[in-house]
Image (cartoon, rainbow, N blue to C red; front, side):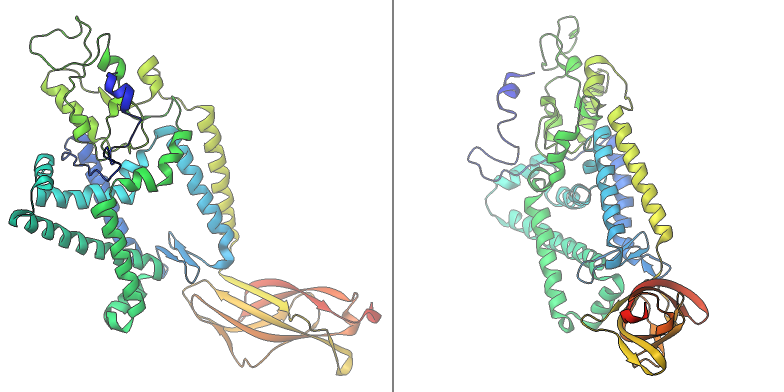
Length: 473
């Protein structure tokens, strides 16, 4: 490894200059096999990301995260506050999956799937290459005084960045408030929903700041996943790695010379062209080993393979490999650690599937009114007063709702409700009285089982307590 790399590569990050200020990274435009694969994956994910809020399954938005109303849709399944335990299990499954994925394949999620990387590398940087040019032109433009050419390019880029950020903010808002609500706000006009429009502009400003200025620092500074990978990786993890055994050999890396037998004189295959450094979107030198900043984007693999092909050396000097593969030529193994993560993930998924099958479309809760005792009525009847709440998680109205006692003989009277119904994806509250003959009570506190019916169909059952006089025990 080069002396400079030994001494300095851990002292700072590529986005800071010597004074500690912001140093912009000007990566060379990537090209190659892996980049083409990433483009296909990114286009599919971009289409999915933009269309997902507008896709509906059984009337439910495919993905929605309405934090204000605490309503979430995941894969078309609606989750209400009453389903918080299911949402928590889904989040835990997500975390365990990331643990398993990272332990096996490193930070590949960041380079291939993360929305930050996809928008930055496949949208904003491509616009930048179109307007400013490749790495060399961008560096010259950055150092150029503010003349007509620089002003024209900067203003054009900023306007395009703002428009893209505004569109992303609209998609983001569709995930938060629902696509139907967003389309209604757009139809009504922004000035009829000023608070929402202001929120939209704030989101636009945040996205513009992230993609126009903060950029790769999100992955390096803000994202906790980069810190997490340090404790998850081991020498068996597959990452984008530089084969230092082959690249350095006995005498280290050296510039390419024609008609030279590098292997015979002990020179490594690395020709010190710095193409892997120039193409890196986070400004690191992959030859210094696995680093926090590396997002496994494969840009350095393509750049190195191109150079190796140009000088008639074998490709794969930088490749997907583990430390054990480079050092000992070991192949990927499903280690006990990965088996443990897989077992936990399987158990959690089984629990989630079971809970989803047991989950009802209607949630009912009947509770005694706090502070109220029982009441004696005519014909030896005992009455208790309750509050009820019915939640309809479906996309259909539930009509002709009534309550029936299933465990005792008695009557249930709903207060001020001639016809009880719950609209689609809504809830209704009310008050009811339950009356039971004292002779049917065996204790001063009875557990009642109540059925909720829609017409003749039993749609839910629930339980509650009923108080009576001790003298009837």
